[in-house]
Amino acid sequence: MKADIVIYNIGQLVTFMEGPLARVSEDNAVIVRDAGVAIRDGKIVAVGRSSDIKSRFEGSKINADKRLVTPGLIDPHTHLVFYGSREDEFEDKLRGVSYSEILARGGGIYRTVTATREANVNDLLKRVLSVARLMLSHGTTTIEVKSGYALDLEGEAKMLYVARKLEELLPLKVIPTLLAHVPPLVYKENIQEYVNYFTNAIIPEIANRKLALYIDVFCDKGAFSLNDSKIILEAGLRAGLRARIHADQIEYIGCSKLVEKLNLDSLDHLEKMPEENSRLIAERGAVATLLPTSIMSMLEQSRPPVRALREAKTIIAIGSDYNPNNMTPLQQTVIDISPYILGLTPLEALAAATINAAKSLNISHEVGAIKENYTADIIIWEIENYKWLGYTWGYNKVLKVIAKGRIAYSRE
Ligand code: NIG
Ligand code: FE
Image 1: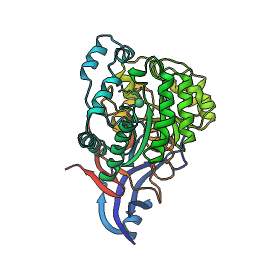
Image 2: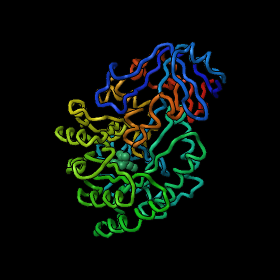
Image 3: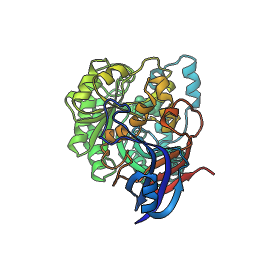
């Protein structure tokens, strides 16, 4: 039979077949020795024993040389489109100035808003492309991309247009999200007016132009209140978008409890979430998306309640939260530091960055697993088994990345 690419001699193939997982272990992972995979027209057409696949399929052959093979990584939380940088704020934080103080004095997100509004589309796209290429070369094949650094209709549309362009130019799958990030400073005394503008003008128009699939809101102290966040998410849902939320990152003001009332696919951050809310997320089948590098960049001591989330059987995903406050775009690094920051096992971290991340984006039926009819997003690693994830870190452990059935990266 004809194939475009045939990968054979895989030492260990690791994937997760039974849908998104609440309790990840070797019992519910699919771990196959001596495996092979055939790819045609951008899809996986067969997975099986190396010798069978090699003899059944003709096509360009890749010898995996007994290495680890996994699905491409899915990064379900990025603020990839922005302009400028904030390295001096990193020094301020190290001197003891908090993220909230920097934001309140008009720095942080507000500074990036000024730079992003001023940037033209081509400069923005150029920067975004170079970071996205870096992501691909480290194994990321799907990314969620948020707007949120323009705060007005045309600026937010510009950001989402850049996200869409990215998908045309690289073999990446992009899930675009309209983010209500912070009320602009000029609305400081009249936040209701901005919430009205956001819900009545920005959301319907962005949905109309099909520039976003998700609505997201930064629900926290110094950003949007619980009530305004609810209004914004409801408006997004009414406009036909799906919903996700930045919740309980800086202070607990009840944001994660919104999962009881609203259809949220994912609740992200959760550093300050009370343990008992884990059950609410699990009951609704939503995903808890944890962001370990963001915890580091905030110089944050609190952790999301990982043990309670596990006990409640919550589906856990991880993401990079790449943004100017947290300049780490690599989901591979996020996997590697998850055991240290969150206490995840390497296998949990791999599920969190593949099938569970796909679930948080509502695409676990097409990406996030090595399975027939799934998109051919596959990594051939330098390491021989998954137990080396996190065990060794700080360099690129990826040898080859196949994205949408094409070789997107190959180490020389
Ligand atoms: O997810 N918390 C809100 N938004 C981002 C930070 C954005 C920024 O500081 O520019 C986050 O951490
Ligand atoms: Fe974020």
